[in-house]
View 1 (cartoon, helix red, strand yellow):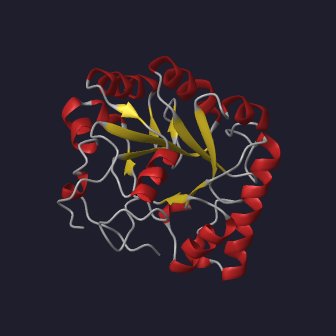
View 2 (tube, one colour):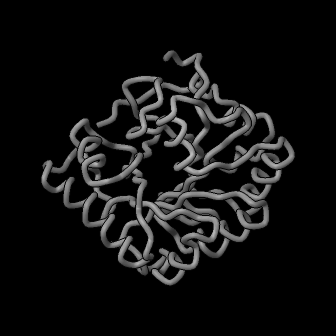
View 3 (cartoon, rainbow, N blue to C red):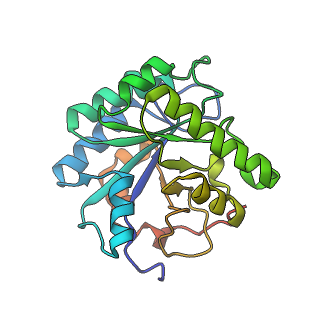
Length: 235
């Protein structure tokens, strides 16, 4: 598959809220609401990662004007700001959390995660401690992926089927471990070795305030955004 091929847009957010003096990519509530409103006006349908996997299993494609919405890290604002807006527009999303960070300052509590789980949001794993997997020994990668999945499942009482690699970094071994541990798919950033859709290296599109502009957002959800960006090495 070449970069000219359609690739289902998977949008990647971190924090939706007030911009702070830190490194966290943040989209303002106003910009996020505007993005959801534009997607609604353009009749986009938000689908889940389970729908993506089902299509890959069946060798089919989701209809054009489909989009996937994801959030990394599980910030408190995901519960307080993003979730109400998603509910208002009827958009499902996946939130990737780190059990080792849950409840710390700025992060959602387990109670908030439980409230979101199954109520429009799917909870996935972002490893146990936001570890950059390419720098870990294979046994530690296994521990990060296995322990985080188990910890989240014990708390929310639901299967955890999806993974997001911190900073998008992964290796062939990490992909194999993710599969063996029981994840059905895993998300990266724009790191890849191929423009084809790989269920254990699903590329996402980083979202910013600027994407509230209709032309920028339209480019990102067109399915051909790969024309405008370069792939990065996975490691």
